[in-house]
Structures are given as C-alpha cells and as structure tokens.
Length: 362
Image (cartoon, rainbow, N blue to C red; front, side, top):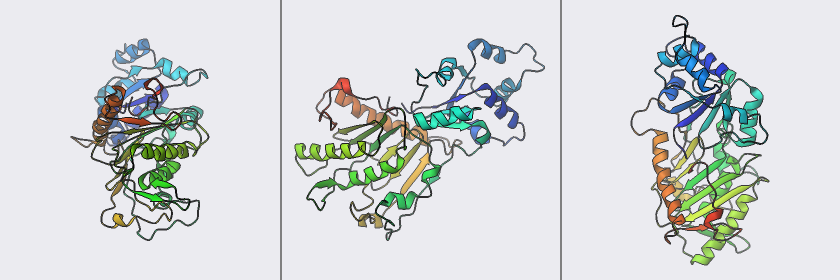
C-alpha cells in the first residue's frame, strides 16, 4: 500500500550522494530531507557489511556513508540483497509496489525497471535535487478543441506535461460523480460522461508496454439514474474498452459503494491528479470543455514528495489517509456486507478468490 517511500540504492550511488553533499550545506537538501523524513533506505549490502559501516574500526576514517548518515541524522539503511539480486534473475520480479524508487549506477537496470515494471528508477548521474518535485495546475481554455481526431481534451491541456510524469503500474480512482451524467452516441448507446473522460485520460497515462499486469481500481457511489442491471452493462462495456487500450494485461475493478472519499482524485504510484469538479471535464464526442467547468476548473497534478519540508499533513500523508478509506470500501465488499458491488466484464461480478491486489492499496 502507498506508504513511506522505499528507496533501493546501490552502495556506489549512495557514496556519490554522500560525496556530493559535502559541496555545500544546501546540496541535495530536498533529497536529504526525503531520506530523513519520508523514506526507508535499502542497500545492496549484507547485514555484516552494514554492521561494518555502522561501526567502523578506524574512527578517524569512518568512510563516506557513515559520515553522511550520521552527519545528516538519517535513519540507517536496511539490507536488501535478495531484491537487488532479483534485478538480474529472469525468474524473479523485484519490489515494484506503490511508491518504490530505485537509484542505481547501472543504466541498463534503470531502463529495465522503467520499461518492464513501470517503476521510478534513476541513474545516479541523472540525479538532481528536484527529481522528486512535480506540480502543475493546467489551464483549461474554454475554446480548446483537439487538433485532430486522434487527440482528446486531456491531450490538449497536458501535452507539455506528459513527458515529465514518472512511470506507473497501478491506478486508483475515486469520484462521487463518475456515473451521474450520461449521453447517447450516434448509435444510440449510452455512455457515462465521467467514464468517457477517464478512459481518455487513462489512454495518456498507461505505459506503451509493461511486462506485468497493470491494475486499475475505480471506487464510486452508484449515482446512475438507470436500474442496476443497465448500469452494470454500461460499466462492463467501459471496462472492456479500457482493457483494449493496450496489448498487455490491464486488470480493471469497479466498486460501487454507498460513499467514498469527498475529493475526486486519481492516484498513481508516484503522483496524484486532483479535480475539484470530477472527471467530466470534456464533452464525450466533441471533446470541448464541459460548460460547468467555466465556474470552477481547478485541476492539480503533483508528486507525493514535491514539498518534503512541509510540516503537518503532507501530500503523501493526505493520500495515505484517503486510500485507507478506499481500502475500507474494498474490504466491505470482501466481507460481503451488500454495501459494495464489484463489476468485472469478464465475470460480471467476480469471486472474492479472483480479486486482484492493486499495488497502491495492498
């Protein structure tokens, strides 16, 4: 489940950070604060090697890592020999859950982690103090119209931002109005406007390729004006459409629950998209901006670690609180209380034994 960031770093990279941090007191100040307050550190060293660094024999020459950790008041790292070994074992998958980050001195390993698993991996030579910082609030031009049929409204307002977003392998969505508005297409087929928008957005966020299943979990109240059977049919068709966006496996779960969190958000492994008025931003067919967005159109996209010095309720803590509520809704279904209903187009209402483990919730 989304929690404190787990940073896997090899010894060479940590030594480089330690050496560079001596350039000035402010060098790597953001990264050091993240290591101090928001992350757990894991090294490619055995417990015996860590003990040697922690208790150096020559106190007059303790070594860069010892001086760095002690001098910056950082928590001591843990051993993660097996996880680092999994990077080069074709039969194993390394830790790719929630907001796991790798900082490595090996370009090939970095590329594999990004491309195969949708994980944020950083080559040590590319590390900079703002690498975990991301924040934008895109302007929504009421006259925006996609330039061609292949575009959608989201692509128009996020065109310059997409390349800046970190990779992902899981998404959780919460919006109390996803099923509130519907429109009929030229073929006479009903669509929920929020879901049409969400599919267009997912089409931009899903990686082109990935070697593991990508998990998408939607949690929302049933505000549909249709009877339950028709609502499930429309949602199931949407699930099929999302799965067809890529050639790899996309596991889509849809929970209809009495209540959800107040905010309307999309959570990924490393960043969050917040929408004040929900996902119905563009009209389903013309892709023009929805008229109700004129009065209030606040959209924010931010990384969980974009303000590491913030005290109190930080972005990562706020996300964790909301996700715990969504987790409880998921558990309500598992307890079969009748409060929640899960839709999956392949089985309609899937069995508890078939439920996925979305990496952001579990």
